[in-house]
Image (cartoon, rainbow, N blue to C red; front, top):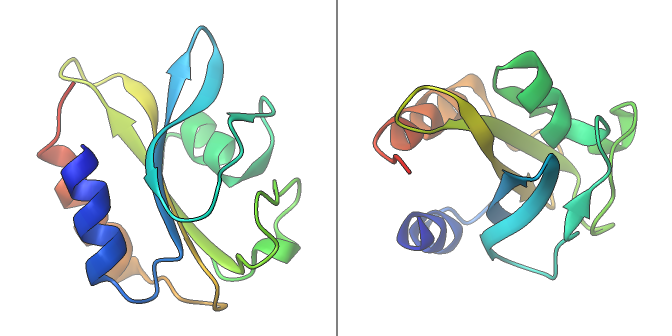
Length: 123
């Protein structure tokens, strides 16, 4: 997982923050990441990460400042994509979260390929 985060973060020039948030005792807690210091535990059912987890689908946000309940870990983040992360049994155990400092950085193409990458990773 650490290698995937490092490669994505350093090879995709518009990835400002790249990392995993995993569920730990009902809390969404930061795990492996690259970028500025992250929020350590995300407020339950708030923000893009919890929305992707609860809705069981990838969410692309063109402007995070317009997303209801957005959690601003870093004010330089302007757009975001979050992909549910599943274990071998197919249960969602967290999310891959990627932020960009530019608005509208992510597309359905990003969503499709990041989902494919996560299909290759199992815990």
